[in-house]
Length: 373
Image 1 (cartoon, one colour):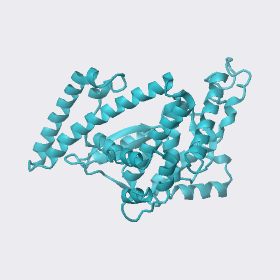
Image 2 (spheres, one colour):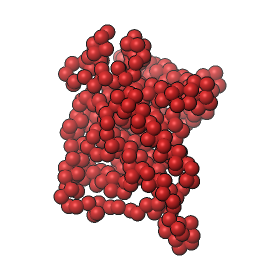
Image 3 (cartoon, helix red, strand yellow):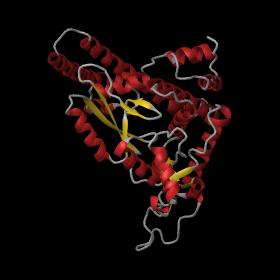
Image 4 (tube, helix red, strand yellow):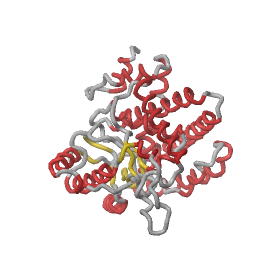
């Protein structure tokens, strides 16, 4: 694939795009992240380009560089399956779930890493009071993304100097909420169908329903719809007796077990933070509780999990920012699942009800009422 750069955009169009980005980002941060985003979008090619034959000489010494064509890593059959899978998931999301009709995920960008951006989150060290950044249009957000990991590390250092717990994580996608056509990235070609479906449905939900200033609700809702939508997709395309579906349910069971463990640990810390101990004593006890939890996790691993995906938890830096991230995405507990069950297990109806919400009042109450409960 030939490299397209910002210079190939007409000046007026580029300026308009940067103004749009400034509604999502702010200050110098706006210019730097906006320019990076435009760089990716400028390199995007139609998804169907993956079906083209690789250019002659691509594998020869002195031939075109390895990144000149999007079909140069995977074989033609793998590329065909990926294109057809994406197109099928998009049809499912639009026609069977009722998510917004957009041109998202109709283009493709080759990238030389397995994540899109480094995202910084932060929390108080002696409570689960999350740190937020304020942006135009989207309002306060509990995370801040950087396309350059070095910028994320500098942000972490700045926040740590203020005494906050901080974490950096890689994310494989984000929604631009309709400002741009969100593309697919090369690392997504290796995703199994259930992960690809979850990802695309999750991000498509953000492009369908987004309440300014309601970051936790937005993420909880997208997490539930993405997961349940992927399950329905796998059931309809592979069947419940397929190995693909069984693999997904095993992974879901392990994820549920991990979330249960995180909630146990979070509950211990919440009790500590609610007490009257001085801050330094709370911090000392916090480290002891986390250390004991890691030992317990390793000792109980085989009785809690069937797969190996969570084996490395004891080596992870666990702090309030890490735990608060789970509170952000899964803090609703069983609310969405229970509401879904009580409303008839009809995901298109569930999504249609979510489309009626507005930012005034309690969105969970609005959703419950929109479903007639």
